Each structure stands twice: as structure tokens, then as C-alpha cells.
View 1 (cartoon, rainbow, N blue to C red):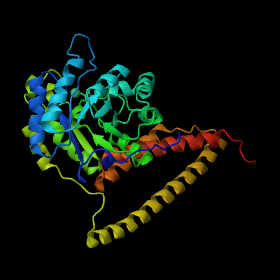
View 2 (spheres, helix red, strand yellow):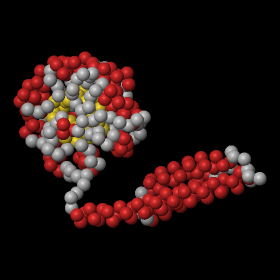
View 3 (cartoon, protein in one colour):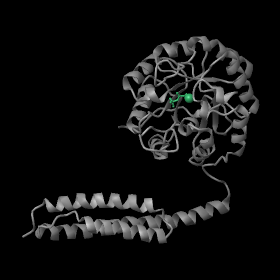
View 4 (tube, helix red, strand yellow):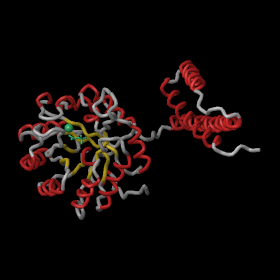
Length: 366
Ligand code: PEP
Ligand code: MN
């Protein structure tokens, strides 16, 4: 995978004056009144840069509300005229794209259920050839980074440069208090691969419940995301889709007021000096960590040679149990989260087994 994407900077297509991009709006456009009133109240907050609304809704079961479709597009035109704000809509087919562009939708997004399907994404890419429109791509439903990256490559391959990622969390089957587990590491990996690609947090679809929105939005800010997309509805409890996770525009405004916006850097000299000193120490500790790992692994190698020459099995369950317990206890005494020590030791143990297999399958030195 060659990680290069031609990405236009966010401020080349939407003006946020250096602030995080804020997109808000209802999960779905339900009625003209609901959409226009929500948009008006959000615009009145003064900190929202674009309005979102679902027109075509991918629903798990047929028969549930599947969006108003083309009928809602003139409402968007009215809401745009009344608020002066650009509009973002989810598109899943070439026909959605054609209609959205015909009615002047400004930003398109690809939903999580579409990103999972490369056929679908390629159809969307083909329909976008020759069009200059910002496209945001939600992470696929399942935690597969390559699938997300592939979608960017397909859309970029159609000549779209105004690109952004929406991190909305993943469905893994694991029990969680969240509707979709964030797995922040996935977005961090995406950022590492494509540092120039804007990442927008979608705390609404991660949370599934209003109560968790603040902590998730703050985490996105703490990780230096470029913006947020949040579902907001004038009467959330009566929303036709995603009722439990939507906020009134007023509650959303309050949430924004309490959000701590972090900077990537600080110009403060004292801060910079302190960071520099701590980083030098961290570099030194990291060097020792890696050297210690290498030392441990070379002991494992020696042990494997003895085991091989004496025909002793390489996996010793009692010893492994003892290692795990004593290291976790030690970690606990040193204020380390026990799961951290456990996870690290599982990785070390796997590598130790791999190394021992290598040695045991090699010919003994005679
Ligand atoms: C939505 O944004 O309303 C939506 C359907 O989200 P997702 O694609 O993340 O499920
Ligand atoms: Mn929704």
C-alpha cells in the first residue's frame, strides 16, 4: 500500500478561522419545518460551519424510516438560503450524487455501511469523476483500516482532493457502553499514514446515547481532530431515527461551550523548554525499553536451545501463569493499569514462542 493521497487543506474549501470544523444537524430530514428550524437554531449558535441531514437512510430492517429522499432536497435549499450555511448529505449511489449536486448540496459523505463495500465505493467514485465537491468518508462498520484507506484511494482516484475522514466508531460484537466502539487507535493509524487528511469525530454514532457525547467529543479534541459532526434535532426524543443520541441545538451549544480545544503546539517558551526536557528523558527510557526487550529475547533464545537439546516442550503453562501474575502485581504496585501489563506480556510471550519455535526447529549445534 503506497500511502500518498492528494488532499486539499480543509481551509481551502470551508472557512473555520483556525477553529475545529463543526458540522451539526439532524440524523434525518423529516419535515420542512423540522429541518429549517433545526438549521436556524444551529446557525444562531454562531459556531456551526455546516449543517448535516440524512435524506437517504441505510436502515437495518426494511419498513423503518428510510429517509425522505428527493422530496427533502428543496427543504435543504430553503434552509441554506435562510442560514447561509453549507449543507452536507450522505450519498450511497450514483443517483444520490446526481440529485444532491442538482439541488446544490455542498458536502457529500459516504456512510459506514457503504465504506465496507468496494463495489459501492467504486461506483460512487466513478460518479464523482470531473466533479469538484468535498467528500467525507466514514470509517467502515467493521474495524478494517485497509477498507477505509481503500475508499480514500478510490475517491481520490476519481480526482476528488477535498477529502476528509469521519471517525464514527466500530461494530465489533464486543460488549461496550457505546453503540460503536471508538477504537481511537484506528484513527491515529490513519493520521500517521495520511498526516494531511482531516479527521472529523462523530461522537453521536459512537455514543448512541446523549450522555456519552461530551466525553467522546472531548477525546476527539484531545487527539487533535480537525472537527466534529454531531446530530442535533429540535425535538430529539421524537426523532424518526437515532432519537437517543441527538441533542437540541441549545444543548449542543452548551456542549461546545464546555469543550476544551487543544492546540497542536504552544508558543510559550517555558512550556516548550519543559516539553523538551521531558522528551529527552522519554527518549532515553524508550531506548532502555527496547534494549531490555532485546536482552530478554536473547535469554529466551538461549533457553530454547536447552529445551531443544533436552527435548522439553516450549510452552510451560505454570511458568507463563506465574510470569503474568507476578508482573501484573508488580505493575499494580507501580501504579500501572493491570490490563496494560497483561497486554504487553501477551505480546512478549507470543514473540517468545515464535522465537522458540524457530530455535527448536533448527538443527542442534554439535
Ligand atoms: C448517519 O450519519 O446518520 C449515519 C447513518 O451514520 P453511519 O453511516 O455512521 O452509521
Ligand atoms: Mn444517525
